[in-house]
Length: 451
Ligand code: TRP
Image 1 (cartoon, rainbow, N blue to C red):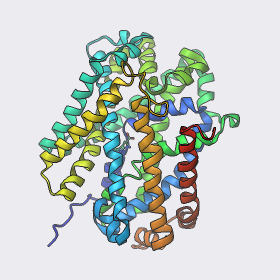
Image 2: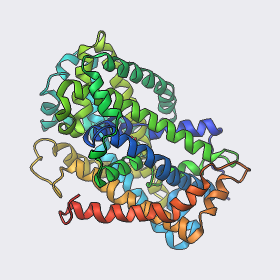
Image 3: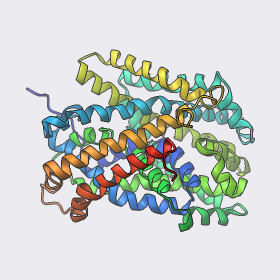
Image 4: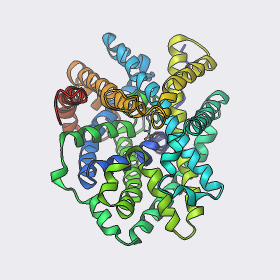
């Protein structure tokens, strides 16, 4: 007999758990630098439109699949259709690609947290600080090891629940601090230009690339197309109103990302003008925020607090990423958690070390013109996730029918606001879009087409 699956206590519990793991470096680190890079307001606009259409469709689908089958992704897709078991296996590739470089960035956050805690925040505000740190061979690797080590320790000791409890309590604090910092940034001289850049869409900056970047970010931030939401869905009770939960998770996750952008993007504008938005890339948050804290009264303390909270947000996400890999290995190969964690360690070393060194001593080695970290990020968000999303759309939209999911979401007589939109999205718009992204974006990377 199968053991009864443990489940979330109810709608709110589910939303908080899903949002808690969804909110992480994707919102705080990745969203602001993409928004800066892809033209500010226009990126925000495209992102929100995609979230309301694609994000909603895919999240409803994955959570629906999870609750309908009550299985983890490695089994869930096979239960739905005997020929679709492979999807579960591709999906698990995503966390495997993400975990190593996620821990590299987590290491950067750890370094900044330590710097601020030891009262050296002023140092971090210097122009050369970030470059000097990531360019070094040893120090970033050390912090990567620390961050990965803590993640692995939590998994091995099985204390995820404790960490989650702490972070659930602290996430609202992160929100409040972020609002405070955003407001402070707006009081700095010259802030309005930056706020305009962040909020007002400039349609001349729109391009196909904007859509691709926003789509990748959407998948990443909502933890879609990697089996995670299927797993969460499998833990939800049959009474939970899923379409409502989907809306809440989306709103929460997008709000945090938007707020993070509000702290960072106008500030970049203040300190280094419009050129600054194009220059720093992945380092944007680390370069910009210490400058804000330097100007702020009590900035040393706010800075320390801020990086502690980002550290915790990153840690809860890296724990759930590692948990996803570990549990699917345990399920699939019937090995112990310890052995599964060891596999994660091997992957983390193999992919994490190049991701870290690629910013410094190995920066001359590139794949398709990208350093290792950027490449792994590209591979997961722009290749593997669209593939998983595409096949999910084919399975639900064309083989089983949209009603499979709509029925699951409305089985207690709930209203599903966008059921009509859902039907069109899952069958036509989403799969076509995935094919376009896969084909053109890949061709562009090989220089065959220019976007
Ligand atoms: N969505 C998370 C973030 O925004 C990152 C993430 C990717 C994640 N995959 C995940 C979190 C799997 C939990 C589980 O940072």
